[in-house]
Length: 158
Image (tube, rainbow, N blue to C red; front, side, top):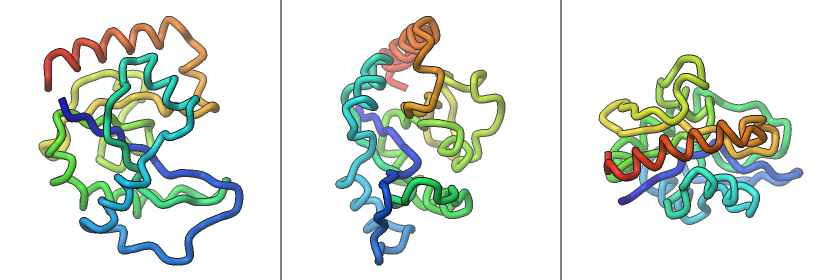
């Protein structure tokens, strides 16, 4: 089963590249696949708790220093330009409300987490962002409930 995990962007202390390829199109897609997302061991451990261990991962936006505002318009543009790539996966996991919103998934986040959704022909499931700031990961019962939901989704292959 091919899974894609989509994150927001990497944050660094002060660094941002001077030049990035156009955020639209294949070149940026390939770059973001190569750079990946959620490389920190703490993030990987949280994702493993809910059964996500093997996946491709991308971030919608390039790295930004801490505190730089989220560019929702740019994230929407990237998400829409990547729809054909996303359709190549059995399921895409959208990490957090910003990523979900970039694909037009709106609503109360707790009500959306762990559900099978389809947007623009892409099979998606919203998961909590594995940030250290996200309190979801402190609730072992909620983590276990999501793990159970995702195990069903992953067995169904769609």
